Image (cartoon, rainbow, N blue to C red; front, side, top):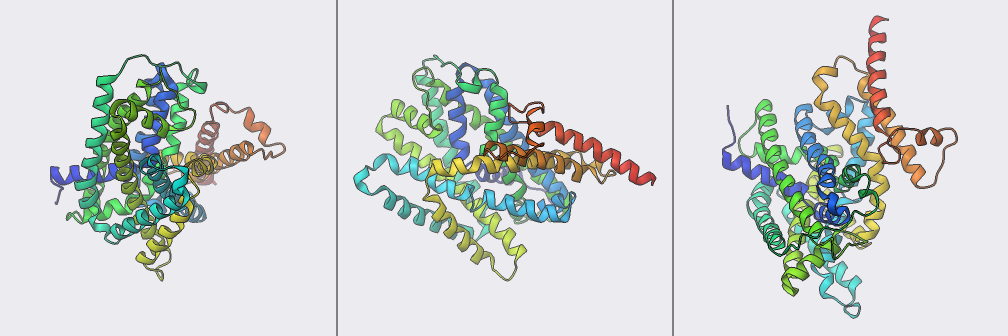
Length: 436
């Protein structure tokens, strides 16, 4: 039985880390640390649940289920088609891929420009170069492990370590007071901030690319593929945990003197300028470009793979071109615009993703009750959609009022009780159908 060597397993783990660690992963932990102040570690714990725990569990669940489509089909074939399509669009050209270019531009190029320099033209030029290079790398998906895991990710981790160590040495220890929801519900607020990374959704879509990388190392047996994916996923999870804690610390270290009202990019910019001077902006810019490029390549690859399987007449290369061009156009809307659009979409999709991952993990114990998947997903989905419509000031008579009475509504977790009720109803319905 073939097994990955320790070196190759670490390399695959680094590659998985690089797939997850992109724009949002750099922005949100420092902002969380900066806003939560003295409650930083409580908030970080909540963030880690959705930004580390669920993504890694998602990779494991997906490996065991045999892919996102097979997993989603446990609910219903129609659900599988719609959910998988929406997932790929959200982590692909619709939101996540454009965000990689817009974020890296705002961090690596924008600080050195003035209004007279033609910012919009510069952003367009940067986006074209960024997606052109990403497209060229995507042409050989079997090489991602070598290019991302062996070269770019070690460079990224080294640069983050330099910023973190310098922050520790220069820290004054005067944490700020928690702002807003971090004052009374730091854990839940951190939990919800983890949505913004999109990593739980991405985990369900990275499976094919991860499998290609592992199979390229000579692992072909399904059981061993699952085993090696799990081990590499755990390595990636440990790295994510360490880096998130470091970034949260960077954010909270300046919270006593500076608290951003916008996003984590401002926090990181202030920190590196204070600690390193003008050179800090260059250092931070390189960090963002590498992190965002890694994720962009991974997302372009997995989206192109999926849509090529969905519509074989359009080649993998053609899909990569289509997604690169669309993402390039959307990227020029700007970071804050993309973030504002992503929030309602994530609140609709993310609860479904979390429930699906949990069901997949307990599948051996619930597989005899075939209605558990459809009932729990139905209840979760309806609640999430009604919640999103409510945030957009669209009220459904007789339904929206029920939403307000659900536990954890104020904490934006109203879907939890309906999900549990759906599981219980699914079990009961399965038993009734068996006896009829």
